[in-house]
Image (cartoon, rainbow, N blue to C red):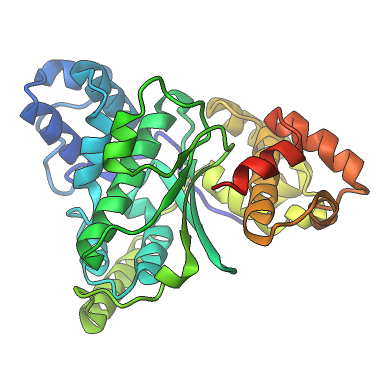
Length: 342
């Protein structure tokens, strides 16, 4: 049985990301009562050790901060403060990471502590490493800001720990904003929009270059502490995260709603109801996974339509092209040409 957390479960330490968010807003002279509107929280709960808030409360807090500050740089400035953060041993492990690969592995493995609203996944089998992000608890309106926050956080962390600005390339699952100045200032010039994937790409040669601040012993001790704490009190990801992982593992076997529900030890109707509460449905989740796999194969392996169709279990390339256009609104050829320029 696959276990997951519900969006209303108090799974986020109040003194971590929520407190950081509130501190930054107050430093910009935002009013306290307005920041906590509709969160069900009071100002005493956020900095208090031992208190926890739910993803829904954290999402509402972020909405309030973005609305009250009403500034194009808010998400980027928040990202500057996110990592390594003050999240206990996992922050110490990030701080002492020996290489980019180890930092990304820590980020992905312990994402529930570091980035509870946005799930990172790393693919690094070939000459190009791809770190891509997906929403853990829905909230599509917040997704652009969350992506900007997390990408900025990782760029800042890597620049600090490596001692140089790494040559990241950026893909966004959105149209180009009217003004891209903040993206260019905080992320760089190598930006690509309308990619149907929120991802950061870098040549794999950068993954294993030693970092000057790296400390193998300190990183190992910190990671052991995180793992021991996780054994005592397991921290579970969200239903969309768990379902994505399941679908990705079985994507070549044409997974169905019934198969997936059985893996979660719930009925198909219950799985549909839980997804509906998050503003999604099973077919949308499956199409997202298939799209991401196809884009990865196009980008990193220069695969053609026949190869991707066979990988995903389609009978022929024609059926794959038809489905891909339904998923993305574009033909595979057009999107592949755009990706090859990234």
